[in-house]
Length: 323
Image 1 (spheres, one colour):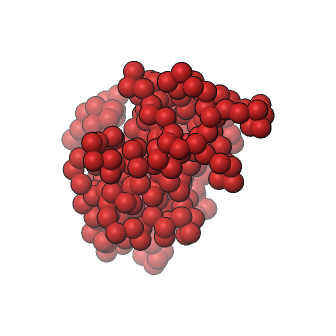
Image 2 (cartoon, rainbow, N blue to C red):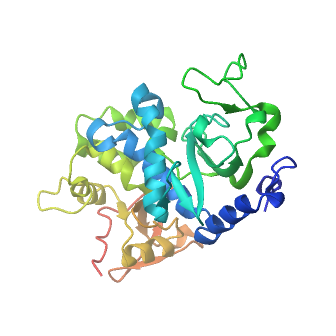
């Protein structure tokens, strides 16, 4: 637990029984923060809609789409945690009305007049920084201001925001935690260009697995590049030998998925091991004395090792067992 996991000196969490009750409820439902993190990743991907648009960069969203992000976060959290809807605010947690506020800008939440004096669940995520935070805030009108700090009536929409000197009012549940990586966004320009300049969805997917070796690749990246409903067809084996797995086997590359047998191969090769909805590709060669001491995977009765870009591969690579 870091310093930022603790309530700030002004947060008054210990003197606010309702806030303490909501905090404990959320921590009981999601002790590690993994469910919040998953919702935020899914929501950003939902907004980007890569399957239909090919987008993977938040900056490519239209202004109205960015504005809609807060509503989607609110709805997706409600569905994930099965919160009850409040009468006046978004949620009813432990019988307490709670308003949900999301901002892509840190501390940029806009508080509506109806939430003044109430508890707000404040959420922040930045796909470029790869970070997210969730906290609780009692919206004390005396410590809120307008964006320009010109009047005490709030902005033109009648909303308020937290002043910088009162940031410590936020009681953090999770502060600046890693957001699951948006792979296409964070790839270096050389590899990104090599992938995106391919003439078809299939060739883009093939190039992705060719260029990004021994690194977890989420299905969202495949979906964005494939831009088709059955995007998984771009990866799996087929009789025409045009999909990623058969094409890259001829180049000495295997693609492991989240099936148990695939995960076992990835682990035996030294990882990383794909999690649910992920792939990891490996350049492989039959184990020989000059490979020295390194992890070895037995595939179809032969021993294979993962090799680096400057090492020779064996072609074709083995076909992974189906079970």
